[in-house]
Image 1 (cartoon, protein in one colour):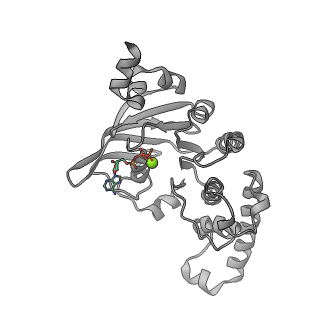
Image 2 (cartoon, helix red, strand yellow):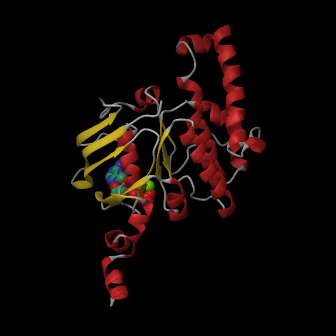
Image 3 (spheres, rainbow, N blue to C red):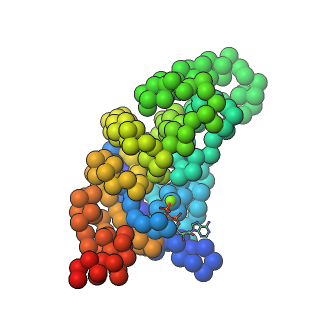
Length: 260
Ligand SMILES: Nc1ncnc2c1ncn2[C@@H]1O[C@H](COP(=O)(O)OP(=O)(O)OP(=O)(O)O)[C@@H](O)[C@H]1O
Ligand SMILES: [Mg+2]
């Protein structure tokens, strides 16, 4: 079942620098929620706080009401959280399919000892996961590439591999960090179709993206971050016409010049 995510007063500091100031919002189950803002606004840092890669200095983050602040990524994966990264880390010499299968570790029965010994149960599960991984690649338009080395694909398609890897873990909450970056224009429609299908599979999606066409087409709601603070929350259309958001993107001086 799709997860509910809440953030309340999340602060993140590195030494003397405050990267996130009192950020809070609620993502309802089954929503596609956008997180937007200029470069350096703190979007990826916020994802890192949710996924356990960064530990916030204070605040609260819950999944379905349970506090997750301070949990490690592996534990959160078992609770149904999956994410993709702004800069995908793939095993470039392995095949696309093998890279997707790295997302399967939360699904294999037993523990590391059983996996190492490769019991019949492990072998059967691996075979099933392989079929499922191929199916995910087909559904995201990457079926043709399953057996190619990952380094033969473009950066934009690496994001698709990561997306399949994340989906193979059967998440209830999926965080996507700039999935359209590096994708040719013609592939963006396919991505929009894929993300809608993910939501229809009862998965809550939070998406960071600079591609405003994609944000407008997909999201139920957005939060705009600027300099680590929440600037506004509303629909994508409301965000695009909000003077504070326009100013954050083009700078106050330029906004004043335009108004003059
Ligand atoms: N580990 C870290 N140590 C120190 N500063 C950090 C760290 N991670 C992020 N920051 C700082 O936090 C700020 C926000 O960075 P972040 O990558 O979250 O922005 P972003 O909104 O994702 O930007 P972009 O759209 O360019 O990806 C930046 O000033 C960055 O230098
Ligand atoms: Mg980022």
